[in-house]
Amino acid sequence: MTPSSPRTALVPRPAKARVKGGQFTFDAGTRMRVTAGAEPAADLLRTLLAPATGLPLPPAADGPVVLVLDTALTGLGSEGYGLTIGPQSVLLRARSVTGLLRGVQTIRQLLPAQALAASPRPGVRWTVPCADITDVPRLPWRGAMLDVARHFQPLPYLLRYVDLLALHKINVFHLHLTDDQGWRMPVSAYPKLTEIGGHRRQSLIGPGGDRYDGTPHGGAYTRADLTRLVVHAAARGITVMPEIEMPGHSRAALAAYPHLGNRPGRTLDVWTRWGVCDTILGVHEEVLDFCRTVWEEVMDVFPSPYLHIGGDECPTTEWERSPAARSRARSEGLTGPAALHGWFLDRIGTFLTRQGRRPVGWAETGSELPAGFTAMAWRDPAHTLHAARRGHDVINSYHRATYFDYPQSAGPDEPPGQPGGVVGLRDVHGHDPVPGTAPPHTAARILGTQAHLWTEYAATPARIEYLTYPRLCALADVGWTGPTTWADFSARLAGHTARLDALHVGRHP
Ligand code: ACM
Image (spheres, rainbow, N blue to C red):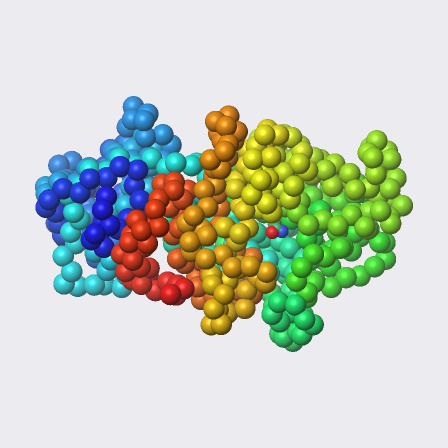
């Protein structure tokens, strides 16, 4: 589809699209025929269009807007859809409800951008251009991670965050719920995790240095909040994958329950610094019981098949100094305390696998995760292929292309961000998560890609959106469409910004 008109500047770009002459007009009398099973897509279309358009789209057996769920459409896979728009009709077809939900977002993008506004826009003609679209994603995993541990974000913002992901056909919302600086997941058997671990005294200001802001920060979700998030995301075809970090990045848990650590009798605060903390979980039975109990509650709340258990940046000095950890390493027949890292992840991963779930971990070298783990390879571009060759499914998370906590330019006006790099829009757009050198059987293990926003320097929704957009538009395009030319992408993005503006996304210019 040519990006010549803002209306057809679709992001992500459909696999196949042809714009024809003419248009279909939605009005107050437009009815919708919805085949059995397609109701969730009809509900979503009504929900998304109601605030600005007020279109009721009532059901009718002879309605000109038709949503069809047809399991025989095998070529469309689990997320694809076909959309045929003529002057008298709109036909959206898919093999799965998820495919219909993706098509609903395309219809929304084809309408005038005012359709995305949060309040009534009277006087606009709600037209969509006639077109034939057949659209199937290139990669099955197109994710976005938000770190709500460094800076808590309340539920209403998470719901909006998910709405914006859905507009871009992102299908995984990775929620980083725990870290050294905060624990946001309620666990009924361990109430102090949120009561104590959910609050820190203050935070380090800016990258480097030793200056603190003196401002307490805190917050935690309730089960009802998280359940509402899961339901809201599912209605938009998005899976919420929770992450509970272990055995490192767990200082907030240790502040709440110091006996889970490696030095009996010690008390710790919820960490006020950023970076890698050397206090980590112990390896005694009580810790494993704790982890299983936490995961049982997490599994109760999150139906996601994938569960992220962290595993990154885990210094093992505490284990090396701990008689209990050294003895555990010996009794497990390990080469030494450092090998407890893989042992720990394997114990938890096996537990999750037995419950029918799939463990995900951060891969720092591509070699360290136990078999059966899906790897998020973040450090080096070569690690994606390395982990895939070792038999892991991999989500390409190369930090120089997917970490949105890096500033978007080296300009003097950028707000403080993660030091040490710049991730520009072109870096995101130009990074192919499936390296061209990958042989087919290795490439097949690369499930997709994911944006990551660590929030040391992003305390507010406004800052989160500034860092996320428009870079997420590029990542969504790479994951759904595959490589496109910069000219093609940037022309479509120019049209797409009218939608972001209608949604009041405070994007980077
Ligand atoms: C990471 O950036 N520590 C996964």
